[in-house]
Amino acid sequence: MPRRRPSLVARLALAYGFVALLLMGASSVFLYRALAHAAWRDDAEDVNHASRSVAQRLDAEGEVEPDGLDVEEDVFVRVRDAAGRTVVESGGMDALPASLFPGPSGKLARLRASDGSRWIAAVTAWKGGTVEAAKNLGYHARLLDGYQDTL
Image 1 (cartoon, one colour):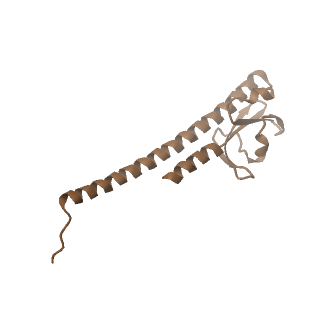
Image 2: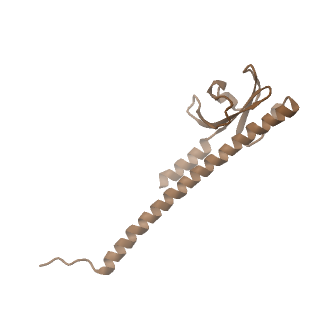
Image 3: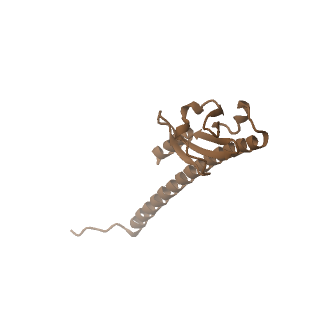
């Protein structure tokens, strides 16, 4: 007995389901990548703003109090003089030794602390030394890992 082919309706429904599955998968990946990029851009802006604003304040006033380092939430700042000695730093910077930071190139750096935590950092020059700013990427990493697990 000859085998019957599925009806046209069944084949179209199967094709529609396959195309819908592909589109949903592609849109999920696109949205995940957009979220990851937006999180990175926001963290980069926070770190850049903190390092530049503290450097501008130092250039204008010549000194800054520890309270003046609280520029952005969850961004830690260290001010170093021209000899490389720490002048003042915000709480939390002890997790990142000064040797991890690059020179004041104006580019962002990705750092990994000794405890394995990931950070984004920027170094800005001021007339008396450098300003190092860093933000822990742990929150966004956990957020993205949660989304990635559901993909």
